[in-house]
Image (cartoon, rainbow, N blue to C red; front, side, top):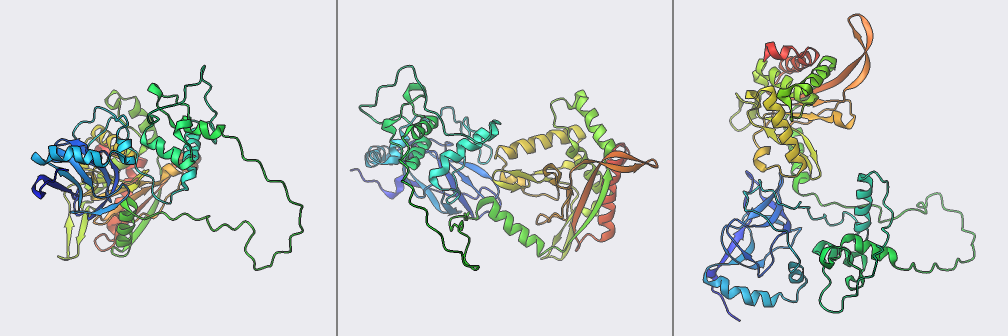
Amino acid sequence: MTTMTDSSVREFKMPDVGEGLTEAEILKWYVQPGDTVTDGQVVCEVETAKAAVELPIPYDGVVRELHFPEGTTVDVGTSIIAVAVGDGAAAAAEPVQEAVADTPAAAEAEEPKPEGRQPVLVGYGVSTSSTKRRPRKGAQPPAAAGEASAAIQAEMNGHGPAAPAAPPAPAAPAAPVTGGRPLAKPPVRKLAKDLGVDLATVVPSGPDGIITREDVHAAVAAEPAAPEPQAAPAAVAPAPSPTAAPASYDTTRETRVPVKGVRKATAAAMVGSAFTAPHVTEFVTVDVTRTMKLVEELKQDKEYAGLRVNPLLLIAKALLVAIKRNPDINASWDEAAQEIVVKHYVNLGIAAATPRGLIVPNIKDAHAQTLPQLAGSLGELVSTAREGKTSPAAMQGGTVTITNVGVFGVDTGTPILNPGESAILAVGAIKLQPWVHKGKVKPRQVTTLALSFDHRLVDGELGSKVLADVAAVLEQPKRLISWA
């Protein structure tokens, strides 16, 4: 076996993909020992406290070793992969491949891989196939993973809870595999292992004889049910003790979820904010009927064709107008210098609920954008967040935030400030309510706004003026023209 000197091996360390991050979790490896890699090729996906990003390797070579398995949280600066480069790459390729030839990881690496992946920048890459994050340990029993997936998919398709999959009925059964390894992708192999299914006994229905998830579920459904034990004679149960636990008590009814990634960072930030900045929250109920009419008009305007036009767009613009009229609200508190730092720009944060948790990306220099430009920025921000592609840079440097709890049917809330910001506006649900309009009670579109602010630098007068200005614009949206 050929040996290599240390100079022929490069250690790729976990980078700081965001400002000041200390750790990241390895979600998925795209390479295995023995694979050839090129400069700029994505080798793994990691999740930081701010975003899920893909890491490209910065040199050519052959993968010698993966230092950590998927699901491991690694400190920034720790080596995560060893790559043989230069003269050592050729010497490393054959021995490494022989060493891992009989391992499950190597066997799975032989499976067909998606083509067309291009080198990408960290945090901005888009792969040709969707990347799904690795399930967290303890989220659910492994044996229930396949059934849960089928149930969720059925509910999304509007068919209610999923029933066990029926076995396929091909015109002629495929011949059993007599030699070689059954063809199946790694996730399908894991599903079969969790469900106790031998892939050699599964009839494939995929292209080129590949076994699919549905084939595995069909094999489970086709297995004969175990005979039910004969019922024992009924016995008279003793009367339960008043202090005894209920008969249905089950010690497995709790699930523990590790706190990491976005949720860990959010928890730490919220605790720090709540116990550092003295919060004050004020509320106002607003008639937004005219704003809702303007939204419908803008949807028909050719200038807004293809743009996301909704009430949040006009609420965001109203807040920007209020900040322009009351610039001192757009500031931060510098504890070390004992100074108030007034910002002459607005990076408008929009709280977004994603499968990875709550994140707050912001629109840079939102104060300088026209209404159509703001609509485009909001649409891009929401789409990127839902796809899980928000970069760490997009979540840094926010000055003021909007959180729209109304999308959940909630009237309003008392939002907690993002660290380093002075104000956050919560928008409640817009509902048709009886309202006194021009001396008569009429049905009007009404919502409740809540503004939380840091009382160290924003007093009650300034906070009240900002909230009142936002409400005035939403009641009379024509003021956007005269005040902007």
